[in-house]
Image (cartoon, rainbow, N blue to C red; front, side, top):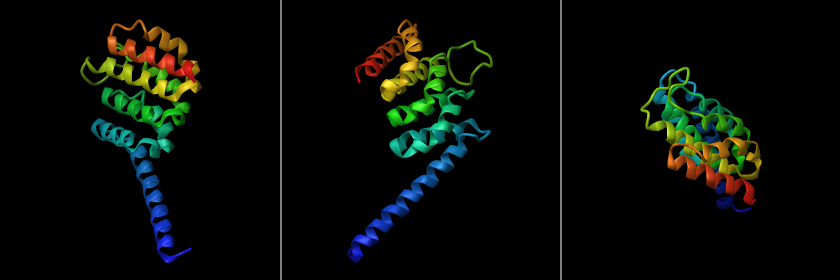
Length: 163
């Protein structure tokens, strides 16, 4: 192997190690007492796409956060992972039931509740057939009061059954 190729391969492995450290750091930030830090960490993980697959357990836990932005960005990050997010199916099903008036009351404007539900449905659809356990909850979501949630749930059901 030539010297340039060896340097290139070494650079790629260093980049990969750096990415792993970044994902680990962002996963840790999902536990911050500051909701803004947790939301930014989830948003950053959503921007990493497939590189964030080691964050699935932390993102699944974050789907039960008291802050709606954290829930939204966590579901968005899981959506970007597609089938790699399969371990988060139960947590995503739970996120489909994000409604005002629950206990404890969640932090964020009421208009964010359907956003969380629709992106959770989209994440389940992106997982595909491995999300079959979510079918009953998605069928229920097709009757949601919000049109975006209904559409996302119907699309998810098609994606889960289509493969």
